[in-house]
Length: 110
Image 1 (cartoon, rainbow, N blue to C red):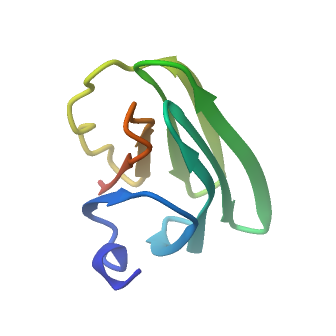
Image 2 (cartoon, rainbow, N blue to C red; image 1 turned 180 degrees about the vertical axis):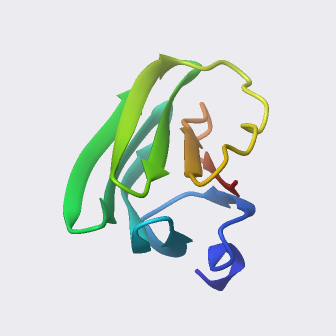
């Protein structure tokens, strides 16, 4: 999805989509594989590594931080989370499952 190519976007998704971003370790790919009411599943590939993540339930989501030498993800209750703050030298990916079957994906570069 071209809207996120610069590493800064917010989009609503209701089905599978692939989003490419310029990550700190080179090109990164976020592939949303499943979206449903209060559910999202996705994969992040960056710097030769791959991570499968997901969240389900009201107000649930995940935050993935890509850094030059690795990444980390935490999932859980995010509620109506605000857009994440930029982090120096990192790309932050936030996904929020929506009760209507539409998820919000935010990408923020630092």
